[in-house]
Length: 82
Image 1: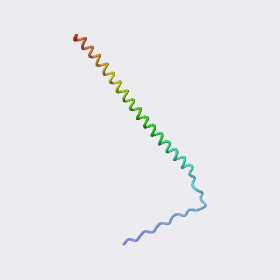
Image 2: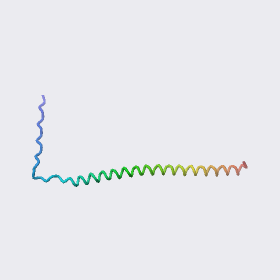
Image 3: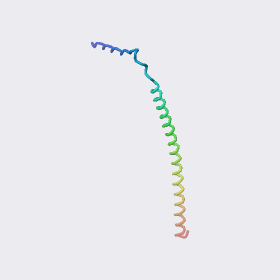
Image 4: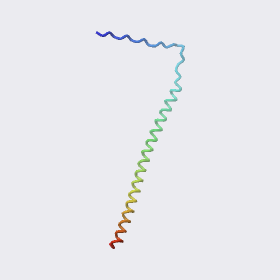
């Protein structure tokens, strides 16, 4: 039968040690969350602009298609006398 392992002794904390300065940790946490918020805002802005760019490109392509179609139709009428 296996013997239970001994529980390791917890390290002794000296009362002479100064407490941990958490101000740097707090600054780091604020910076981290500010960066996360900025990234999230930029991502939504890029998505919005991507939709606008897509709509503009689609409208431009439709316009070019219509102009080209009308030009071709006009040339066909002129050539064949329709």
